[in-house]
Image (cartoon, rainbow, N blue to C red; front, side, top):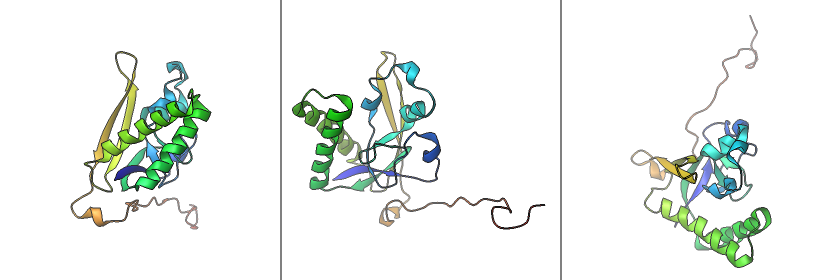
Length: 173
């Protein structure tokens, strides 16, 4: 079975989200986290999380990208339980049965989203309001090049190097 895990290409998530998810955390789109907020509350880092942040099921932080990874039935069951707890505690689910049903629905959506995607396929998310003032989520994928599926998940694809000679230990002019 396949699921989403957070991935980072650079440190920007630390700057654009209130809480950034660490690489490798289980993730869902999590649009429900914004359902209770009035639109005028979507400013700054909250707006960035609304516009394109996946939510981690571990830290409840956000990530700009998530990649397809394998998940076991036991891991998925644990995630359902954990999300149900979070829905009850943080979002006031009326009872355990309702929290479990909502959690299962969220996770089943991700399993279905990933079903036909290759391992290491990267997803991005764009979230907005539609004409009916409902939250709308749109997904885009970056598919690994041929043969890239054998590459370990979360492989670094580039490195950021500072060109400032002072920061590299050189002399400033």
